[in-house]
Image 1 (cartoon, rainbow, N blue to C red):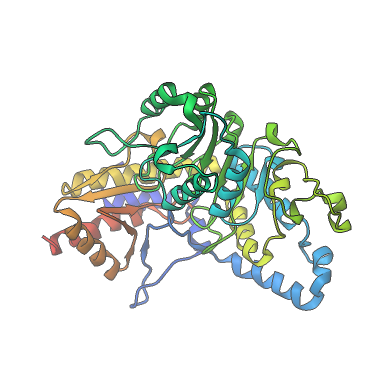
Image 2: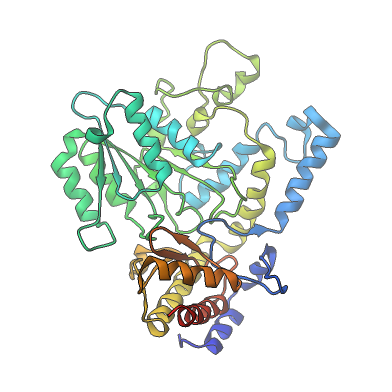
Length: 423
C-alpha cells in the first residue's frame, strides 16, 4: 500500500467495516472538527447505542422497580449470564468458563485467592518486570497476606540489557531454572507499555511443565487480538472491558476459569451471587458454588454498568473478530510504515512481526523524555488524542472498529508537525 493520503482514502472507501465508525461517538475539537482518536487501548469510544441500552434499564427500573429482576426487557437476574456467552465467543472458550463481573483488579484478587496456593518451597510468583502496576500491587499484597516477603517470592523477568521486549525463550529458561520455586505465573496477553503480544499457549505449557499454575491478564487483549483460550490450558484469566470492548469508563470486567477447576471444593472468597442458581434465593446458611466460573461471583452486578457492553458486543458480532483482526493488521502496518518513512526521529519499540503485536505502537522519540512530553502535549493541543506513559513513551492505537487509514495518515502528518515545532 502506497504511503499517501490518496491510498489511505481509497483503502477506507473499500473497507466493508468503515460504516461502523459512524456508530461511535468521536470527540470534537474546540473548533467542532473530529479529533484524531488513537487511544482505544486506554478507553474505547462510546457506542452510540449504549445510550439507548442504559435508558432502557432506567425505564425498566422506573416502571417495574424490583419486578425488573424477572420482568425487565432483559431480566436482571440472568443479565450477566447472558453476557458471558457473547464474551466467551471473543475469548474462544466455553460460556460456563466465563463470568462477567467486578473490575479487573477485583477479579485478579479473587483469582489469586483461589489459585495462588504456596506450599513448601514452591512459593514464588513470576511476573514480567514493568507489569501494569495494579497487577504488581495485587501479587505483592497476596504474598504479604500469606506472611511472605516479596523480595524473596516475587520473580520479575526483565528484558535483556539494552532491549525493550521479553522473549518467551527467556521466560522458559527461568521456569526451567527456578520452576521448583514457582507456584504461579501471571502474564499479560499484550504488555501494556510496549504492545508486545505473547504466545499464551507456549507460556502455559512451559508453566505447567514446571509444575506452576498460570493466569493471564487480558486487559489489552480482549477485543484486540483473537485469543482462543480453548487452545490454551490456562488456569484462569482476567480482563477489563473499557479498552477495546468499549463498555465505558470503569466498566464491568470479567474472568475465565478453566473447566478442570470447577470442583466446588476449590478454595475461593465466596459471595451469595456465586451460590448455585437453583437455591440462591432460598438464602441457605451453607455456600454451594454455582457450576463453572459463575461460582466465583460475589454480589449481583450493576446492570447500569453492564448495559453499554451489550451495545459494543453487538458491533463485534456484526464485524466478526476475523475481519477486525485483518483490518487491524493492515492499519497497524500502515502506521508502522509511515512512522519509519516520514519520522526517522521516532522509533517504535513494539514488535514488527504481525503475530507479535495488536492495535498499538509504542513510540520513543529522539531527544529524551522532555522533548517527548512536549511533542505529546503539542499533539493533544491540536486535536490528536493518544497517550503518554512515563518515562518516554507515546502510545497510539488504530482501532479497527472506528479508526480508518485516513486517521493513521493524518496522525503521522500531525506528528511530523509536532516534531518540527519542538526541535
